[in-house]
Amino acid sequence: MKILVFLEGQENHLKRASKEAITAALSLAPAENVTGILLHGTSEQAQAAGAFGLANVLVAQGDMLKDYSVTAATSVIEQAVQQTGADLVLFSATAHGKELAPRVAVRLQAGFAPDCMAIELDGNQLVATRPVYAGKASQKIKITTPKQVASLRPNIFTAKKAASAANVNVQEFTPNITAADVKTKVTNVAVNEGKLDVSEADIIVSGGRGLKAPENYHLVESLAKALGGAVGASRAVVDAGWRPHTEQVGQTGKTVSPKLYVACGISGAVQHLAGMSSSKIIVAINKDKEAPIFKLADYGLVGDVLEILPKLTSKINEVHGKPNHN
Ligand code: FAD
Image (cartoon, rainbow, N blue to C red):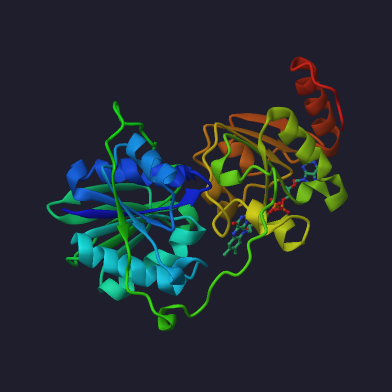
C-alpha cells in the first residue's frame, strides 16, 4: 500500500492536523511507501514533516499555484498520485481537506471515507470508523476500489514525533497546470492577528445563547485570556452574527479536542457535542441543571453565566498573579 498525505503548512510550520495525518499514514505503511505533498510549501515545513517520521515530501511549485485554487490543487494531487503510484490519499478533514478530498476522489474514481476517527487496513483496502447522525453513532466502512481517499477528523489521531527525525527527501514537483485548471482562486486572505484558532488550541472557552447579548461576550474572551485559550462559539451565536464562523464548534463548524473545554451558556445540542465531545475535560456553566451539556461535562456549574464568569476569571487571574480586566 502506497500512501500520499496532503500536508498543510502555516508559515514555517505544519498544521497539527497534518502531523496527525502523517502519524496515521505511518501506522498503515512503512515510511518508504508514504509521501507527503505540500502546495507551495517551504523547506522548513518539509523538515517539520520529517520530525514526524515522513521520509519523502513533494513540494509542488509553479506560477499557477501562487494563488490557492481548489480546482488547480485537485489537479496537482491527481498528478502526484500518478507520479507516486499512491493507492490511498489521506487528508485532514480541515476546511481545506474537506473541499479537496471529495474532488480528488471523483478524479481518481476512488471510494471516499470522510471524517474518519480510526483507520486500519484489510489487505490493501482501507477500513474506517466514522461518525454518523451527528456523532450519535459510528459506522465502519470499507473502501472497495483500488484507488482510495480518506479524510481524518482533526484532533482525534495523536501526532507522534519520530524517535529520530527522518532524513527528508524533498523533491520539487512541477505539475502540468494550465489556466483551465484554475476555475477560482483565492486573491486575498485577511488573518485575524494574534487570535488562537480553536482547532489548534489546548484550551477553549466557548459561549452560547445563554450569554444573552453580544456585548456580554467579553466575559468569554476574558476567561479565555486568563486561561491562555481560544474563544469558541455555538452555532446559535454565530448565526445571530455575534461571532465569526471561524469560531464555531460543532457539526457544521470545527471539530476540537482540547485539554480543557469550557461551555458557557451552551445547551449541548447534539450538533454542538459532535464537535467537542472528545475534549479531555469539559466544564459547563448553565442555569438549567437539566441542560444536556451536563451529561457530558466533567464539572458543572449551575447558575447565571453572567454572574459566574467574572468571578471565575478574577479568581484565575488572582491565582496567576495577573491583573483583572473584566
Ligand atoms: P440554546 O440551545 O438556546 O442554549 C442556550 C443555553 O443557555 C440553554 O441551555 C440555557 O439554559 C442556557 N442559559 C440561558 N441563560 C443563561 C444564563 N443567564 N446563564 C447560564 N445559562 C443560561 N450548533 C452548534 O453549536 N454547532 C454546530 O456546528 C451546529 N451545526 C448544526 C447543524 C445542523 C444541520 C443543525 C440542524 C443544527 C446545528 N447546530 C449547531 C445548532 C444546534 O442544534 C443548536 O441549535 C445550537 O447548538 C444551540 O446553541 P446554544 O446552546 O448556544 O443555544
